[in-house]
Image (cartoon, rainbow, N blue to C red):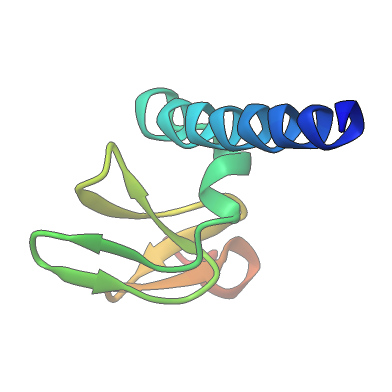
Length: 82
């Protein structure tokens, strides 16, 4: 019985930790957090692609090592011209 209680507490702690991580992503805009969020809702629709993410839960941005090129995310090497 004690083991089951321990597992229950552990799962609650894990959920709280993940929720806090998501809040941290939105507030501090960590690149690592952006990378694990392939699509994100925003007022103007949805950004798609593994290099897209939402900054502060609203804007769609490109994450390193990508840059925005004609509305899409491309690697630096693919658009060095600018």
